[in-house]
Length: 275
Image (cartoon, rainbow, N blue to C red; front, side, top):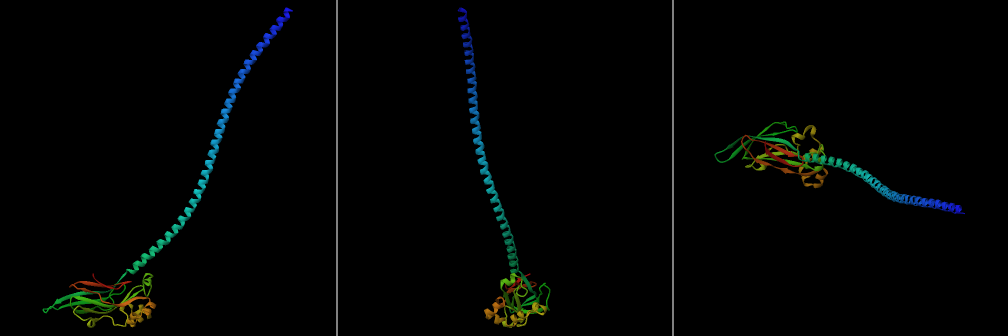
C-alpha cells in the first residue's frame, strides 16, 4: 500500500517536472516566435515602404519620360523653325546683296569730258580771258573725238548740257539702253558771256559722241530729236522710261593750270569737279 503511494507520488513528481520543463520551453518558444513576428512585421513594413518608394520613383520616371518626349518634340519643332529661318536669312541676304548692287549702280559716276585750263589772262581794263581745252571721253575714259580750244570771257566756266534721267528701276537692273543717265553737251561759255552766244559742243538733235555709231538706237535718236517734246509731255516721257529730262549747266571758277572732270551720275545729273 505504501509502495503504491510512493509510486504514485513519484509519477506525479515526474509529470510535474515534465510539465514545468514543457512550460518553460513553451514560454521560450513563444517569446522567440513573438520576436520573429515583430521582425517579420518590421520587414513587411520596410518592404511596403520600399515598394511605395519604388512606385513613386516609377511615377517620377514616367513623368520625366513624358517630359523628355515633350522636349524632344519641341526640339524637332524648333529645328524645323530654325531651318525655315535659315532659308529666310539666305533670301534676305540675297535681297540685301541685290539692294547693295542696285544702290551701287545708282551711284556710279561716268566721266564724260575733261576741261583743262591752259592760261588765264587779266587785261588792263579788268577783263579776264580763260583759255580751256574741252575733251570728250568714251566709256573707258579715253579721248573721244578731237580736243577743242575755247577762249572764255571771265573766270567761271559753264558747261551746258541736255540730260535724260531714266527711272531707277532701269538703272538698278543695269538695262542696256536705260541703265544710266545720258547727256548731250550743248555749249560752253564764260560768266561774262550770254549763254546764247556760247560755243557749240554737240549739235542739237544729233546724239552725243558716246552714243553714235554702233551704240546708237532709234529710241535714243528719238530722245535727242524730240528732246523738248519729251520734256513737255509726261505721258510720252513715261512710256520711254524717262524720269526727268531737262537742261543743266554746272559751272566752276577756274584756276590756271587746273584740270576739271565733267561727270554724270547713273541716276542723277551733271557735276563738274577739280581733278
